[in-house]
Length: 239
Ligand SMILES: Nc1ncnc2c1ncn2[C@@H]1O[C@H](COP(=O)(O)OP(=O)(O)O)[C@@H](O)[C@H]1O
Ligand SMILES: [Mg+2]
Image (cartoon, rainbow, N blue to C red; front, top):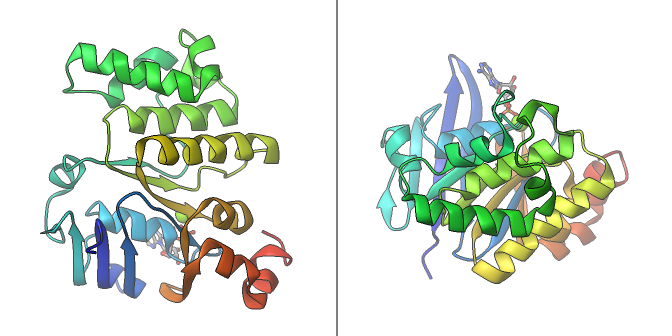
């Protein structure tokens, strides 16, 4: 089986600083794959490199059989890939409804309202608050909105950067439960970047550990959760 998304030997730099040191990651169709690692490990950089900014200096990124390594960002995002970046960048002065519509730009209106119904089904809270301004939502609701907006483009691959950041455990469980449900019912492929290793590994089919810009471990979620070195570094020692 060829992977839907594959990174092979990918490096990325900020000026002279090397943030990714030859990363190999594969995401198969229908999988939830998580990339865990401490703050500063390069998780966001990896996600942004997939989207073309910063650009991979070495190595190759392929998506759906096509080499996208040198493709401009807007063309990468047009290939059924949606991203919910770190820090839930919603439009604070726009309503929930308007925020969601922004994610559907270019899609026919009928399709957008159908997709919005699916998003509301997944996050009923957003339906209740559809006329409320994004900036007045709670942190958890803003995260739901950020994910919902990404889903509005009907992606085949969803990239999520730290959706659990700063949220209470109960809210994290709600959001991860929704991601699981979406994956189970629609087969959506998800690459989830997380510092919250415990919840992420419980959710994901497979995981990778990123340390200082390099992958140090890979395995199924259950396998990684059981490893003593993971427990010591990411589970019992904090987050
Ligand atoms: N825009 C930037 N300019 C320079 N260095 C950066 C920039 N963004 C991130 N870095 C550095 O790259 C490394 C990886 O950062 P990042 O990918 O944000 O890590 P993570 O998401 O795992 O916390 C860190 O050392 C960080 O300081
Ligand atoms: Mg980050």
